[in-house]
Image (cartoon, rainbow, N blue to C red; front, side):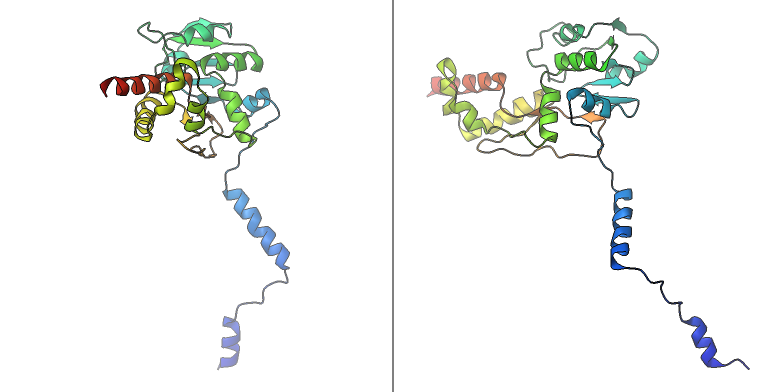
Length: 242
């Protein structure tokens, strides 16, 4: 007959091996970082930043895709690009002409508007040329993103932007909060791809660092001249109806 004491002893789990608290915390930390996506961006220069984005085969900014072999095309033309069915350009300056007009041939005063034309492909030869082309397509986009990643970018409140206007645009200081909010909804949100980092009276962090380093955000650090011009029209119209 088996000794009950021995049976009970068999059900007792073996003692834990001796391990320090430091080792336990280190193990937990290692598991956390393995499960948490990290950004591996080199913030030394624009070129190292772009190179970091191309760790995979391609990356995106706005409505365009660019690849590790320095090709750029409209994201919606990806399948056509794969069949070599697009009009080819080899100079980065061609991006300036591409960004100037939409598919109907209408002038694009706002380069971050969601109406970039289709049917083209840039085949460039270096990361430097890639940088030039992106600056033509989306002016200052890389600079703003790099500044934000370096924690140096601060949005300018709308009231401060309007307060420094002069001449024919001085009247924009009369823009009411309601008019400003409507302009932001109808102009910024609907007609522009940039994410604003400002509010009417203060700065805001409307963009949060994500784990997808292959999609470069388009940022807006202050109201642009087109927004100010739109505010002027709204204020003048209100003045005329009084």
